[in-house]
Length: 221
Ligand code: TYD
Image (cartoon, rainbow, N blue to C red; front, side, top):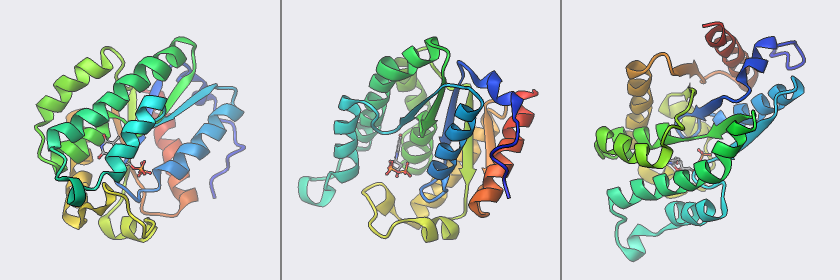
């Protein structure tokens, strides 16, 4: 059982850092995200939580379009349009919330970020990774995450955790999701210093314990 009251002095080194929690749909990352925020705040670290797509007034409108647009009614959304909409939402989030919070010494904790675009639109969707990185340079400027934590699950475990009312992105099928998972693995392999992959197939407490251990080790360098 993970002990949330235990002392974790390493959490204090996260002030002014930018950390992303990411992973396939049904990975349980959002539960871990809120739990981690509580723990960091209990250690006196101010946390700015953001979620993608969305997190700003502009971003929430883009989110609505991305998650509820009906391809069957209005015609297919071009993959490049989809990628640019995710990135546009992100550009606003960085300008409006992430940069000011980092400048203020907060830990910025993001539920998804450019790592999602690389996995979903890139590896799974077929948009070239280099194109996404180039557009990412425009949207992010110097503000790239210090650490990306990937919650890794197999398709069967993920499917059991998902709400049966799936949104547009979640409806893309098992093959797409397998590629998404591969996309995260590829990123972690390309940049091992910036990524942590957590086996998220176990129950919540076990995954949280693994998360804390892995992050503590990372913070020790
Ligand atoms: P959301 O309901 O926020 O899902 P979750 O709780 O899993 O984060 O929906 C976000 C969906 O959008 C999710 O299926 C992943 C997808 N997505 C992309 O395809 N590309 C992106 O860049 C981002 C941020 C999300």
